[in-house]
Image (cartoon, rainbow, N blue to C red):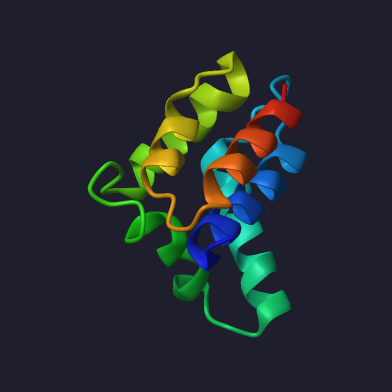
Length: 107
């Protein structure tokens, strides 16, 4: 699997773990916490991890706000849009299957 897809799926898995629809904590707040945790684990700066969804998912996602919106739609309503964006950015032959498996396991 490509590093780009692996990074984004890692971020999404951690956001999903921290998301609760019955709380007032925003996806944005969860994402920020997750990015800091992953950056600390890898001993890199925040921006290195954030690049996984900021730059590497362009042009479909140009802003962090757009990423948060798609994540919220996915978590709250099962929207397939985030999965489609990731599938458009699949690099190697293993990426599409890994993306499908990730989103299927989330339902």
